[in-house]
Each structure stands twice: as C-alpha cells, then as structure tokens.
Image 1 (tube, rainbow, N blue to C red):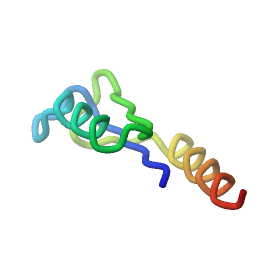
Image 2: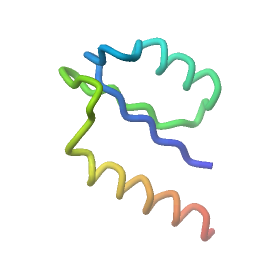
Image 3: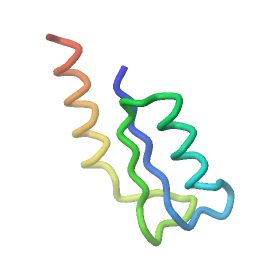
Image 4: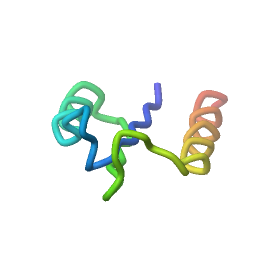
Length: 62
C-alpha cells in the first residue's frame, strides 16, 4: 500500500527525524517528506496529497 508521510522539521510535539527514521525502517517504500521550517501543523499540502492519492489509485487499478 502506498504511504505518504508529511512532517515539519520544527515540530515541537514529535521528533521528526526519529519519526522519519522509524517510518523508513517500517515502510521502506514510503514517500517521506520533511518540510523545512514547518511546525506540527502541516498546511498547504493539498496538491501533494492529491497527487499521492491519484498515483496510489492508478497503481491499484493496474
């Protein structure tokens, strides 16, 4: 299953580097995006999420 992880590198609630490392280890095919200067609230990623969903849907239909 395609997995998209989007996190901010300035998150005060979660250790983004550790989260990205754990996700990469647990889900090697995951698309992990760490956004510079972004805190816990990740906004403005609609196009990224829609693109991921479209690609996931296209992969599933094959």
